[in-house]
Length: 188
Image 1 (cartoon, rainbow, N blue to C red):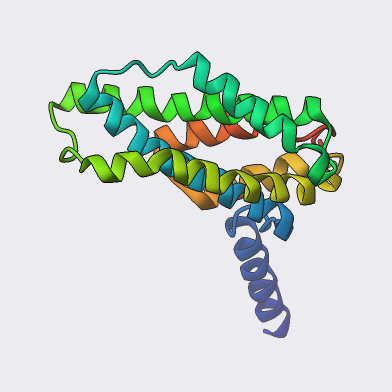
Image 2 (image 1 turned 180 degrees about the horizontal axis):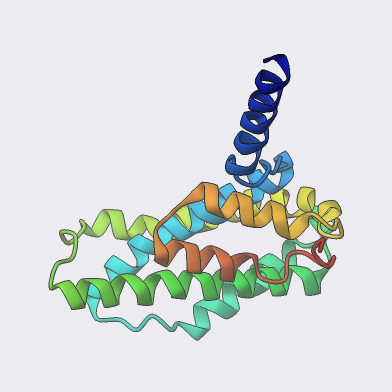
């Protein structure tokens, strides 16, 4: 009887362990902070998409992209970041923003429904919001850099992306925004 009880308890314990899923990844605060600012920037991209949807302006704005990248590169030394790393990071952010813009505009056209047209004053604040967010992104990128060579880096990013959203457009954009951040090969 005791042996039967013991086997039942052991089997229950093993089954619970097998069905509980993968172990929880503990994401370092530096990774969380960087992903939070990236997500904030992508949330602003929703407003940019809305502005472009109603104005008819194209998503692609090469001149603005050059300005954003040049501005970030000029700040690299302030945050002790490599200029090439900053350039690659900002290019990834811009491409991720375009993922959101194209995705949202396509959704609105497909469904025939878009959010109400925002006030002109709200749209005028978009660049101000993006410009104000950039120093925090640079600070968070600088704090993240020591983590990028860790073999768990990719796992941390994936866990944090999954924590941030389930929206397919935002998931794709976050994957784009974080592409190339980790230098180490993931654990196998």
